[in-house]
Length: 535
Image (cartoon, rainbow, N blue to C red; front, side):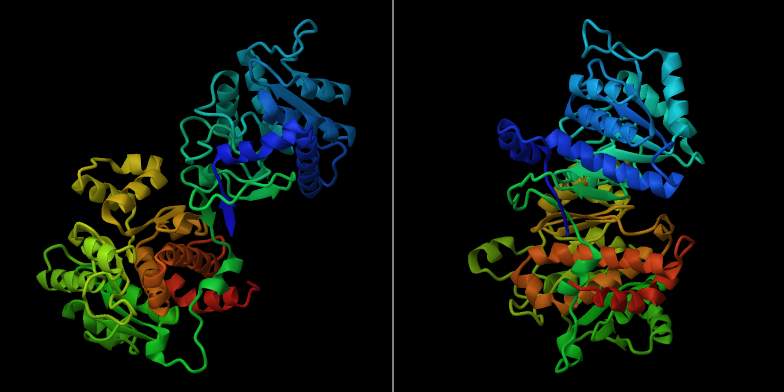
């Protein structure tokens, strides 16, 4: 599991080391230079003679980059350092100059740390040289920066971005891709997307949160000896493949189908019958002990034809999935959705606070209630308050409508610009756990915030959300009693579903188009592969 914290916590952990004279910058520079050298050997065949451009800002981040530039130059690389802030790190400039690094906008002799604004022609030249380099090192802004890039830095980044498609430029970012919201993942201005981020001492939350997460697809932590205290819930987490085995409800030899977990599904309609087929199929394929189809009769025949092991009709269940493909004017479906939400004890927070038990609905867990996944057409039927084991699975547009209906008017574009913020608001307003679907899926619940970036862009396809809902139904049914006793587990299981969903999409057709049906067919093999990994 990756754990990312706020920038304040990392800086607070660094302060006593800096006060004691610990050479953190030297450690960072050596490790950055080592990893850049690895990339150069892979891309250029050798470090000597390879072309490197370092984009250096002010402060320690620029100092890290300049000292790394000096180390690479001493190993024979052809290094240019562009000083793109009003001031440069004096020690870093001196080290780079002594090592033979070519400096652009070099400071004058009388004020060694003062750097003038880089002229427009020089900005274009730096961008062109960057596009021709084997590696570009982004050391413009570190974790202490706030707001968008400005001045020369912003203009050079825009120039590089304009010519980057097809250039093959490999970007290594020191700490963060400069210009992202380091704690919230927003992207307020131009940012140079990184191929590799080297987080010195530990990753900040913005690296895992959308929309910035797409600009930091690979994050490696450089161990500088900085010990960040346990942040508790003030952390953003990302599950990794090795976490699957610890969370997945793997059956025991003595389990029967009821012990393994029964999923009841209300999904599909005359207009969208495929939603029921995909949702029920995902629950079957991911290992539910039994799947009950309690959806509209008009879609039942198709579900049973596609998946004959599905059992029609209501009955004992440890988790419910409601909403995929439902029509808003279907009164029978609405009745079924409301009944399922009643089984979750929705709307009974005062009762829970007084008794420790949510609601009074009949169910199979120790508390007399069951988890419910609420998707698509069922989101409009929520009660005022929900139990934390009610998981809402909206996309950005659906979350915007949900928030607006609860007195927080917001547009889809605003949700997409700050997904974690709006998912947290929805969790606060509803009491439910929120799984906000997107290129990076954000989960907010009692256990804090998780962000999963496991899915290929090809997974943005019709029916993919129906598969995700059925998969999550299997996980919550298999661990229903645990989820009710420990609501923080619900968010981790939701993130686990997003991870496996994304991995199955990759496995179904690596690097190419994928359909929801292909993901569904791949699920059993992907689950088996992940469970075989060491925990």
